[in-house]
Every structure is written in structure tokens, then in C-alpha cells.
Image 1 (tube, rainbow, N blue to C red):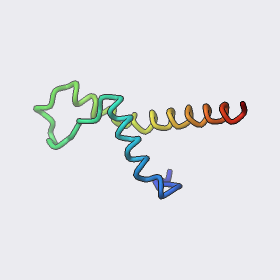
Image 2 (image 1 turned 180 degrees about the vertical axis):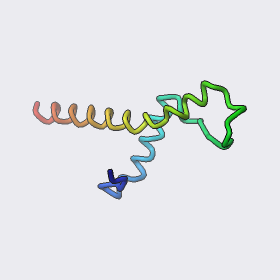
Image 3 (image 1 turned 60 degrees about the horizontal axis):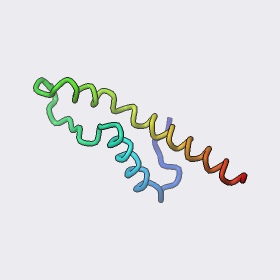
Length: 75
């Protein structure tokens, strides 16, 4: 799978969108500065482990927006 942006001009907006989705998922302030994470509360550790779900949520929202756009264009 390629990680390149298909429309380079959209890179900044995609990054902003990613941060919005992470915020909606309560993952916006999760920073892993401590390698062993021994002093990090378990609820924060679980958020870090589940942060990979951000990409999936982004795709779900983009597909939903595209579907709505298709419906709106056919009216």
C-alpha cells in the first residue's frame, strides 16, 4: 500500500482532517514520550494502541461524504 498523497495540494487539509478525526476519537492529546509507559494510565495506553483506527475512521467519513455528494449531484 502506498502512503503517497494522490493530490499533493491536499496534504495540509488531510493532516488537518486527521487531527479532527483524532480529536473526535479523544486521541488528540495522546503523546508517547515515555518508552516504557510504566507511569502512563491504562486508559491512555489503550487510546495509543487504538490510534491506528484514525485512518479507518477517516476513510469511512470520506466515503460517506462522497456518497452524499453523489446523491446531491443526482437531484
